[in-house]
Image (cartoon, rainbow, N blue to C red; front, side, top):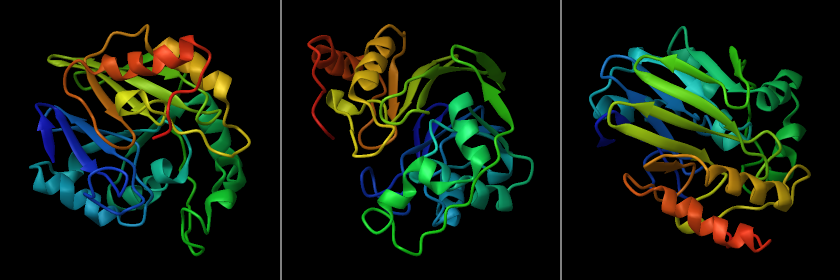
Length: 245
């Protein structure tokens, strides 16, 4: 689903726009029309729906070149391996903490053991993706016309990161689960979720320059997107967690 020049939404589940499988996060794709770069990959339970959404938006799935992961949670990383089976040569990019977790191939490190039976069905199978390139905090890389910069934002999970993307007509924050529309967040009863780190990450995001706001679930904004982070910062500056999504 094309949402503006260069930006498509190719997956979104029940907590978003019901475009693909209910467990999928928002999966945004940035493209120059020929080569495409995906941010997160959904839960992996219906990769065909993601490829179909790309095709419906006029994008050849064979042009998919890279997947950038915001964190290891299954609704964001589970789709990588199924997509790799469909499209050869995909480069998977992540932060150092996410890469370290995925290297260990242990679903407990993404709290899937806690979520199975509550969020995910008992027979859900998560296949660990391989990370091909690690970006350090603040490091940028060029992929096609897009300058992608990783920002470590622990809180929702210890390995969480966001990306800013700059190109002609695009100045976007791909926020994963760090902060959502209207400044809401998601704190969970898992070992690596931290209120204090989440608030620190919100303050750090408020220092960045961006216009489009592309979160991992729910509503996105194509202009004045920073207002959502600033709404969360009001609570963070008071030492309080923002409202839950």
